[in-house]
Length: 489
Ligand code: G6P
Image (tube, rainbow, N blue to C red; front, side, top):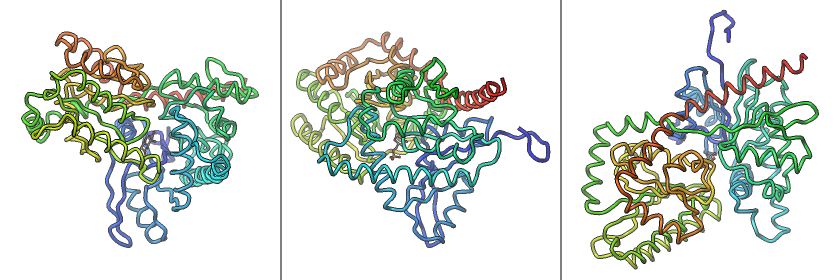
């Protein structure tokens, strides 16, 4: 890649995601404070030296006035971030509505909302219209900042319409789209009223990526069955044009976690936690407070374990970190009360005057506190009902070099395909099975734990987030070159 002055430069990558990797808090009319949030995508892209990434996304706040928008745009520019401003009504219809009340549950096999049919149809139509409108607003910001040669990488279920909007603007633009959730069986996708329009919009991309081979296969089948297109080993073909479809399993920046364990503050915290829970085995759950994470089922399995194993009642504690999310969506509000109710009942049943079996926290922890917690954990419970990948399982493994604890992992998380040989795999819907796996994990011999940990640690440290991002972008570049060659022939 050449700059106008002839010097080589790194390829520019425009990363487009619903949310920017910063949270913005307004301090005054024209003053903002920004905090970088350290999600998987951020560390993946920070670690890649081959390209220069810029982010385009919603800042997560409503900024109705121009002065505020100007000031925020300026502050974000220093972090290489470009905001898309969405008003409250659009956020309500597009983000709370179509994205999180329709697509998210559907893609995780929880089906479409079951309200009164007529009302659903009416709100469905307006939410879908808002979804398309929001995607067009993202496209407008991308095209404003696009320069020839840039790679545009669209992320997740919020932006399925974006590839189409971008290609309509410039058919030469290199566009990739990656889904961070599962893509469900075509039989599930078929139930969505806008099933065809969404598939066609995604197919406008040059490369479409998923976490696992199964999700990619489901997507290709949906295109075959719903749109009648031809599925090939490379992807989906429509009138001679190929959209490449492939699996790119994400990873984490494992070094960041391993290094954190050496930080004095983290070591201090590890010591405190060890003292606090001395004589008890520590079990850990870290999840966003979301239906797909199977938190009630997990807690009920823990209750069953305590019920059947009186010996363990005062020798084990479950620490459940449940990070609040999408709190404006009614389903999420119901879930919060449900979890509180179950935790209260179990603590009442098995607690003593000095100890409770479950410590439940409705909040996130900072990075260092989280690493300390991972390091002192004996058994991690990742029992999502469905999950695109689930990187908590990876983070736990990265922090377990000294403890070599056990990972209980849902077979319905994408991570089961990579960490399955080292974890105890469970069906999270089967509470009896999960309860039995808790017993198996707590009683596992040190040799067995070591063997399982070695397998997982090797995987987590060699399949990193950086490698994931590099592979996707280089595959996207290759796909476009091959397509051009095909046209020339
Ligand atoms: C999932 C999605 C992400 C999303 C995250 C947090 O991991 O795949 O795209 O950003 O959840 O959800 P939120 O709605 O708070 O952005």
